[in-house]
Every structure is written in structure tokens, then in C-alpha cells.
Amino acid sequence: MAEDQSWRGKVGKMDPDEIDQFLSAGRLVRLACVDHDGWPFVVPMWYEWDKSEGDGVFWVIPRMKSAWAQYLKREPRCAITIDEEQPPYRKVLVKAEAILVEEPNIGGKWVEIATKMSYRYLGENGPKYLEPTLNEPRWLYKLKPVKITTWQGVDWHKKYVTAGKSE
Image (cartoon, rainbow, N blue to C red; front, side, top):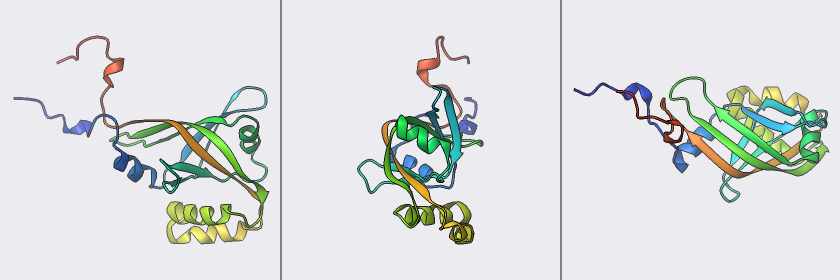
């Protein structure tokens, strides 16, 4: 009789619908870029996954004084990770190009995107958080994926296994 392996969840890459569903939830993204001294810099933040542009883009909205906004302006190559800390341990890893859409401003395109984010992350209380800060300038970046890698479930990808699986 075979041992029950259902605790592993669905193992392997996510399909496009699974990716969209996962990215549409209110999870934080961790953005990695390079600071002015050449050191890695990682920051967690809100994001908006937008499928209206080709295969999809990520929108991020730095505050005017966010150091990482300047880092992306100087070096647009970056990476992001969206994952979860509970089974089935899904994760999306992205190499991306940061495209500066708006320098810090008040009332730009970022407002519409930030409004969507506020609802997604805070529910009906989103506007209570966002509206009092609409007078604070923000940047708008579009992160265009160059490569997306996904994984889900509790098991190793076959490329990491050097010997036969233990029984």
C-alpha cells in the first residue's frame, strides 16, 4: 500500500491561472536591487500585478525619499520574490527591468494604482490609510518581467536530486 503523500500538495511549476491567482492576493513582494555602493538591497513592499500589459507587469510605488527608487533609476535590473510561509509553499521568482513611469509627484497615475493596492491589502479600510497621504509625492515604477520561475508543494525539483529518491 502506497504511503499518503497528499501533505505535499501539488508539486511543481504553477500554470498561468495559478500564477495569476497567487499574484492577485495581498502578499508582500521583496524587491532586490543594487545600492549606490554596489551592495544588494532588499525591501518588502506592496505591489499590483497587472495583466492588461502583455504577459503582465508589476507596479510598485516608492515614496519620494525611498532610497531604492534612486537605485532602480540608476540600475533598472532587479529581482522580486513573492512567496508564502505556509503550505503549499508557493513562490514566484522574477528577474525584471524597472521602468520609471513617474518621478515623484502628487496626483499622478500612481494614485489609481495605490487605491487598488490599498483595497487589496487593507480591505474596506484601504482608503482610510491612503487618502490622508495623497499629498505626499510618490514615484511610479513598472517592473517588466524578463524571466518568471515558479514552484509549489513540498518536494525537490528533479534538477536538485543527485541520487535516486529515498523510499
